[in-house]
Image (cartoon, rainbow, N blue to C red):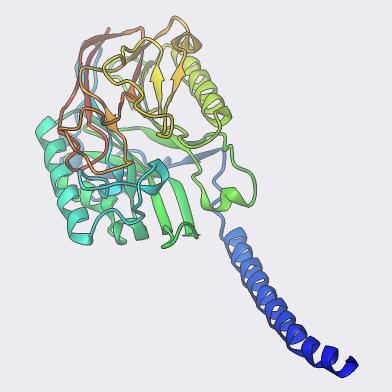
Length: 382
């Protein structure tokens, strides 16, 4: 009997050793992986000066204007009483066209477009921006080198296709590897981008509060603002342009902290007598917006929270156009015939009270090349 027990125990012990060795290898590889991500973690400062690119010339904080007088003459001077047009658009990293669904929003896909589709989307996006021809453009989800967009440098495409604009770019998502799901998202280098036909004297990346702790933050977004300042001719005041893309998938604390910081920054600039326009993807709905046409279709779908506009006080107007949805759900491919399709109104602008609002329009592109529609705002500096 003893010999039988002993012979039965041998294969069990062998299996346990193999399992233990396999687990040890997995843990070792995971530790190395986390270590590499930790060493290479993107750690932006609270405030960082950005390079401003003027038609293939670059200007830093110490050299804010292009030295080529011909190119400088192409940049418009901004004056009190001027009409200004601004477009904000989350371009969905060129990969979230009408065909796309995305796993984070209840869909199945990780890679949502082929390389050819990304290039087609980017061509349509830049063509639309040229057609809209605004003075200022605020873009979100612009990839520079990401697996999800086939390593296409979308920021470079935008600069090339909109040559009359100067531009600044700031990362808000930069990591060597996002290891989930299967297949994994992979490398991400993405950001927000501000373009202007007016010469920006400064552009700055401002770090927003990050709601994610270590090690989750290693593979997550590091949200930010781009704060650009344009001198107003004949005055000591500036037009302050704020490009933003606030938190989407946190429990709510991140959104609240980021919104509070945004309000404080806008108020500080207004207190100086400056003119302020903030625009972008808030991933929230303004409390003064009528969204009755877009009811929540399912508790299982992502739902935006509300921004109480009173948080921004009496010096600002929070505005969007809800006659057309600004965003669609990515739980499935877009189907304009589906009456139960989920839409949102989460993009818009915040404008200081010394600026008169002439019009605002959400441009209905039927989500053909992005999961967001662009919004165009027209204002006058009082």
